[in-house]
Each structure stands twice: as structure tokens, then as C-alpha cells.
Length: 539
View (tube, rainbow, N blue to C red):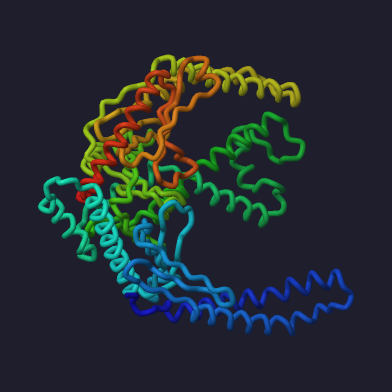
């Protein structure tokens, strides 16, 4: 039976009324100003009459939307009804819910409010957002939905076991502890991992987020508009570049001095981006804690914007260990889990389970979480390294050709120094090759790739959706192939599909066949068992 119908916090009515009111206030300005330029009969003074009417109409619409928005926890679905003129009713089955996330800004925490987001499988968008409810209501919703999700999973598992049973012995003695944990998901979470201040500092100093580049760019735009005498470049950029050969002004500047200016500006931008990235990391992961509640991971993090949520362990598709060169140098690595739905971390399914810990500890976490044996990595054939050598040589040749073209068109001197990029070619090819590896285990496929951001991905066979062999034109000429492994997760653009590149064709076909066979056997085994295949007590 459905529970009582609930509404958002009363302050939601205030914010909705103000938001809609400001929208209604601004619309007459835009409409009247556009129409007055087209039709002579439209007077600009109409704005002062229509704007108050628009504001009152917007406020009324916001209040009506608040009263027409309801939600309820039922026995099978989470129901949300919204809309003023066009009504929309959504019934979200509990088995499709991947994450229940709670976020709080500074103002939310002051007023004791929170935003609750429900993420479902296979979607890149939030299925339902409650903006906003009280902190107590957010916790009630999270616990209630988690409890109903666990019950739905238990019912589905029981149905699968009953359908596949053929006179086998009862496994109730094995299943009972798992059911007991799942039936009490709202108990106080057991702490599994807490990010210490030292680890947070190391994480901030060893991470580089390209998204942080927007902050120095916005700063330059602001300073450029504030200082009209500096033209397209702020005065401080010219002053910093001048002692090392930069131009005093862009007017009539030589090509050499402009290149110096570009190099110095790029260095400043990189430093500013690094600082902004470190600040973002500290603000985003301050107070990170990961716990276990029933069969779910629960986390909380954030300094200014506070996030908390749950990750159902049976929705985890793969586990990834990430390391960049700086983190490898100091002996640290991060652990991420990939779910089948949308995650708040990267607009994909990726969520950080352990932002950063000592490398041995992160690998031990991954082994305990997935049950994977210590992998014995194999590399692609050495022919792959030769392929990378040719690829990077072509890139270096393009760099030299561009420098030569600039010299012909602008009089650039010493363009021939660009041939120094060929020195990096064998180094880059070797580093790419030695960081590749794969391990075909009994229950898991493990893939390692990348130098700047090395990722070690552990994929249980039962999570594999498809295994495909891909061959480019160049790979066909060399007798090589790449093996792509798809899961049900919503991959991000930067991470992409886990791939073992440049295998010998016969090896790729062999692994393809093994993956298909072990996928089928793993699915049959899980149909006879209540085990999730992963451990929530991974420490």
C-alpha cells in the first residue's frame, strides 16, 4: 500500500515563487523591447505595466507548482507527480534505482534543508529531484528507499533461484546472513574508509583537473575588460613576459617575442589551473567518509557543497584503480566503482570509493571488494610497441612540418629546433607499451592501460554485456586486433570502454571466446546463488 503523499519543504514554495516571479518579471522586458523595434504601435512604456503582471503570474505559478508536486514511497515504486497545466506522473521501480544522493549547499545547511536526487540504471540524467526537503526527511527517504530496494532485490533473487532450482539442496543457511543484512539497511553505517587530512593534501597536490581551466580563463576575461588599455591581453601578462623576451605591446611585435608571450601565458595558465584544481579537490573531498549500511556503500563529502549518497553493491559493474605519474611517484592510488546508472561525480556512472590511499592499500581494497586473485599481467606483442613508435613519429613529423610552415609565412627563425620532438618519440612509445596489460582470471577480466592516468579495471564476468573484436586498417595489415569489453555502466567520454589494444588476432579471438563462455557460466552460477559477487566489507 502506498504511504502518505508528501510535499516538499514549505521553503520550496518561497524559492519557486521567487524564481518564477523573476522569470515572469523579465519576460515583458524582452518581449516588449523586441516587438517595439518591429511594430510602431508597441510602446516601450508598456514594460512598466506588464512587468508587475508577469511577476504576480510567475509567483502564482510557482506556488501552484509547489502544491501540485507530490511524492510517495509505495511498496513497489517511488512515485512522483508534478506539473501545473500538464501533469506528469512517474513510478520508479526500486530495482532500477542505482543511487540516492543528497546534496547541501551552505545555505541549505543553515536552514536545515537538502536536495535529494534519484539516479536510475541506463540513464545519463537524474530520474527525480526533490528540491528541497528537510534533513530529517532526506535521511528518511534514503533509508526507506534503500530498504525497499533491498527487499525488491531479495524478492527477485528468490524468484530466480526458484525458477532455476532442480532438486538441489537448500542454501538457506548460506543466504540467511545476507538477507539479515539487507533487511536492516537503515542501521547506523559501519565506517570503512575516511580520507585523512594528509591524504586529502596529497590528493589535491597530485591531481590535475582540466575543468578547473575555466577559472583562470574567466579571470583573464574579467581583467581584460577591466583594463581597456591592455587590448586583448591583460597588462600583468605582458609585464611578466617582458623580462624573458616578451613584447611590451602587441602592436608591431615581432614573431619571436609573440612566441615567448604565448609560452609564458601557457605556463601561467597551467599554474593557475593547477592551483584552482587543488582548491576544487579540497573543497569537493573534504571530510570524505565511506561506510557500509546493509548491502550498500554510503558516502559523504564536501566542504562548501556537502554531498552524501548510497551505492548499492549489487549495482556495481566494475572497479577501477587510478594512478597518475605523481601519485605513482609518492606511492598513492585511488579506487573508483562504476555503476549502471548516473553518478554525481562525472556525469557518468563513476564514483570514488577511495579518493586516494597508499597504493598497496588501494589494490588490497580492490581485491577484497571483488574477490579477484592477484593478477598476472600479460602484455600485447612487441609489434604493438613498433606501431606506437611509427604513430608518434608521424605526430612528430607533423609538428616539424607546422614549424616549417610558420617559418615560411612569418619569418620564424630556428624552426629546425622543433626536430627535438623526435627525441620523445621512443620514450613515449615505450611508456605506452609498458603500461599495457591484461589478465584473464577464473572469475574476472583485468585490464590495465594508460601512462598519464593509468587505470586498472577489474570486471567480473557476470557484468560483461558484450565482448567485441575491433580492427583498424593498420591493425589488419599487422595482424593485430583490439578487444573491447562493454558493461551496463554509463561511461564518461574521458574513460570510454575498457579495451585491450593491439593483441595478436588469434589471442584476441581466444580471449573473446573465453569471455563469452565464462560470462554464461557466471550468470548460471549467480542464478543459483544469493551472493552479489562483491563484498561490502572490503576493508
